[in-house]
Length: 265
Image (cartoon, rainbow, N blue to C red):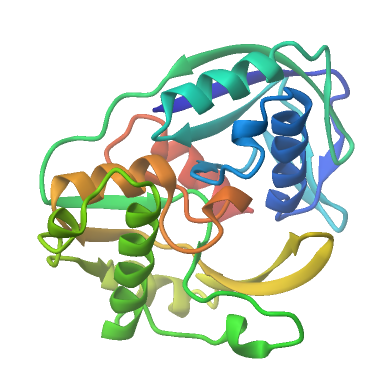
């Protein structure tokens, strides 16, 4: 289930770094631990977006000027999602960077459309490669139009689906159809404009800083419906529980606004 969470912003003009997923990941983990339910302390089958609102950019990062800020939080586990929301809304205030956020409301997002070919947009970067300390492999560039790009995501998705315990091996073996087709026109346009669709992002795990390469671009995913639903709810690629790989359906009503904000960022 995917939930859109709305916060009131107490200090308009406050800022977070341009890529603030690591701050959100720390906050989410802290809330999970604060709730005291040990069954979820090591749970990592969830995903979340960056913060969305009216922004201006400075050297410090993203300054938020809207009175309300939204965050999309998602997991296939209804029990975990409800637990997380209960802990979050028990807080009077949440500090993310310099932002003072007050949890105000939440609402469920629409379910993904059915089908085996769905066009997605990235609302947080997709990470293809696992990161290792003092190792540059996690930053290796792979073209989205190279078969290796799809192959790595397929292997990762099948491993994550298997780890949930909800998909028997004979079921997973039927999910062999999996192909990510990047929007070629978009990639060409971005490169022509001398902008980037692949950047290096910070990542923290057990207080150790890593760097990973993340990709943000529209694409069509050809895969069976259960796979489409899984990546929609749990993200695509590595480190979904760190806020990477969140997707949205290209025809969703909120997309145009969010994509415009990301492009200006």
